[in-house]
Length: 176
Image (cartoon, rainbow, N blue to C red; front, side, top):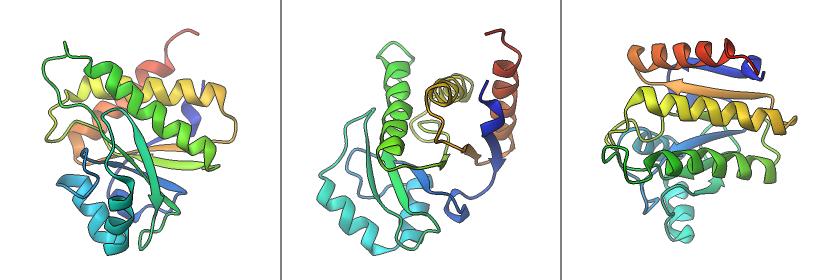
């Protein structure tokens, strides 16, 4: 249920024309590496100025800004957990990232949203575990929210893309 509203693509999240993209940010919200750097670069200096006014973000939470030069209305910044082996609440914090992003999407009446693979880059979260959390939280949200038309997971690289496809397929074959 809901998997028809979930799309997995390989590409550049900064080029998508959706209501909102999610930024895998650091606690400062002032830019970093990977997708964070790409989003700030394309959005322009106004994004950094608005982020300064937000005074950072706690791990597992999310904050929203305008999209500026991006082809989106909003950027939702969330701070994923750094992987320390799984015994420090990483799974709960990653779930909270998705839940916080979806909560903001409801408040701002967002109908299309794109996510990167949160915490799987330099934060070291194993991709298989991260995709399980991402897809499960997306499907849970779609069961409760009829406004959301499309959730897109944007993958950087073929291995991440294949992992998301396999995860979505495994959820599609589960019995309710």
